[in-house]
Image 1 (spheres, rainbow, N blue to C red):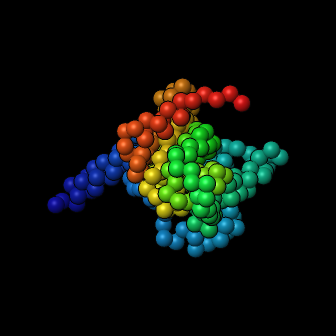
Image 2: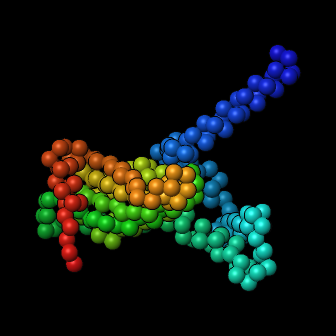
Length: 236
Ligand SMILES: [Zn+2]
């Protein structure tokens, strides 16, 4: 092929890839069930990460024209870097996985346990903007029970990553299944994506619902019972 034609083909392929990448991001499509982490993700320490990110944030702010000598902005790069590593993306590090100790179900409670309205504060991996919502998690004990606050911790851990809501929902269920040794776990997440609410289509009212039903929750009656509990509007 003539060199010019080859260059044209290369250009064409590249634009097609860029279009595809844009399309995936705009439609919030997850390309894998696992968070796409590199193998060397934890080769450098948290402190080294904070140093590096701080420089990158500085770069971004300078590029958009901000004066970093202003008192109000001086500490921003460091603050953002610390928040990234220690808070909003802390769930990438397996060292932060909550210990989900279980207990024997001594009182033989055999019905479904539902924990509603667990706060979800996550980050969309396509736009790095917040996902804010609620998770509702349920399980049926097969002999083990888990502390209620541990369910919140599991939701929190998987939320603190660059995420896609479908993946988050599945990861919460899988972690609960592993901890409890049963497939009978379900989760519904209802969340607003600020990338949809504040930019792009700018729809402030819309929210996204995702669900994952394992084991007995795949059965119509069990699923119905769970969803009915979610509709209960208890006043406190
Ligand atoms: Zn997004």
